[in-house]
Amino acid sequence: MPLDHSAVGVESAPYERSWTSKDALLYAVGVGAGIGDPLEELAFTTENSGGVEQHVLPTYAVLLAQVPGARRIGDFDPAMLVHAEQAFELHRPLAPEGALRVTSKVTGIYDKGSGALVVSEATAADPATGETVITSRGSAFIRGEGGFGGDRGPRDDWAAPDRQPDHQVTYVTRPEQALIYRLSGDRNPLHSDPKFAARAGFERPILHGLCTYGVTGRALLHTLAGSDPARFAAMSGRFSSPVLPGESLTVSIWADGGTALFRTTKDDGTVVIDHGRAAFR
Image 1 (cartoon, rainbow, N blue to C red):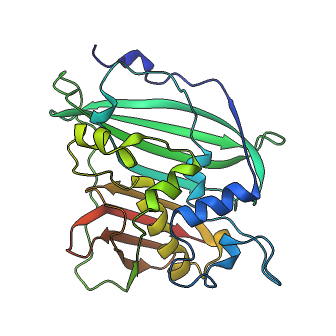
Image 2 (cartoon, rainbow, N blue to C red; image 1 turned 90 degrees about the vertical axis):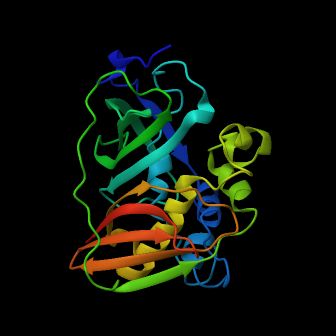
């Protein structure tokens, strides 16, 4: 069955989402906070350390802005779907616990030849005031669903500066990292079930793209925003290669005032997040 192009522009029903202090802590550990030195990121990994106020990693916004069970866009093998790009704007810092009202819509379905790129946008607002807290934009690439003669979509003119990065930060991940991260809500068996991963062409389960994204966000937060989530305004990036749990990730950052370009690579130089942009207050 071809993809349902009539889904484009149709807003979902509002979804009420809440989270607790424990949820925020679990997410932080899921994206590697505290690995190597458990005392280094206590503001994100504990709620009762003396003199340390709990904060929330900005990239948790992407999970909070998801709408479960949003309108189906057609029947396809889920093993053929990969997360392609992710961006978000955080209009105010996230509290350790709270609630949001989230709506989402597909904004475009583009023909990439070997597959289709499905782009969506979500808005998460404070249910009491209606104030927008998070704007999230993402895309998924579905292999085998292209070739329908549609628009190929907009081009991105991102290019790495012709100089060495201003900062390079390397973080390790654990062999069991995907098993921890999945507890924050993404139970896709691609990241835990070897048989499902084999169907998708991988020799073993891979790390969630949004886990790699969260690890990268930690590097940006600590390097460019002084570890202060209130200064973290926006982040975007393109997933370009899978990561296996246990691999190390190096974030190369080119800073320019309140903005930065970045790229995340593995030890062998393979780029795993490309076209990275971030903005800070």
